[in-house]
Amino acid sequence: MAILKIARMGHPVLHRIADNVDDPTDPGITLLINDMIDTLQDAAGIGLAAPQVHVSKRVVIFFVPESRSGEDEQDSETELTIMINPVIEPLSEETNLDWEACLSVPDLMGSVERYSHVKYSWTTPAGNREERLASGFHARAVQHECDHLDGLLYPMRMNDLSLMGYAEETNRNIKLLRRGHGLEEDFEAELQVAEEG
Ligand code: NI
Image (cartoon, rainbow, N blue to C red; front, side):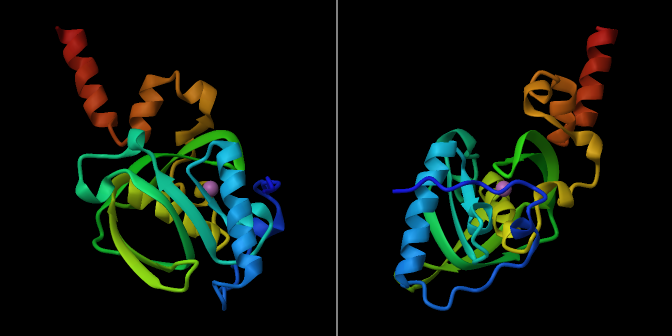
């Protein structure tokens, strides 16, 4: 096993379009996947894309922990999934705003608008093509990881940089947290009720 060094925002490998993998069963790809799994576990992350470990190839691993699963069947806990040459297709124009963090952008978090419902497909390490539907956090995680293959980090997807901060500070700032969840109006209304009450 090997724990690989994680590239940080600004390193050229994170800012280029990664290459397709021609042979998913190539021993070099198998080794890369095993090292990515070790690296993800060591970093206590949810997902990792090959460019984040300095390999410009279209390989992503991710899982959805129970703590991040939602009500929706397509937003449930998801086992560790190894994706080669993944492709995402939005299923509607519906989007939602929520917080993200990234191992390549340490200590920070930011709120990003993403498609709420997607279909995604990928090649497994055995060479089979599979597909799944995803909603909510599951859909968000897939979009975040696949963006890495196109040289995009979540801050580049942000429309409002006031919704970015150090995680340590942001997690204590309830008002900012709620704005980043797209709950600003609810919060203002609740405040008003509280003040009036
Ligand atoms: Ni990331």
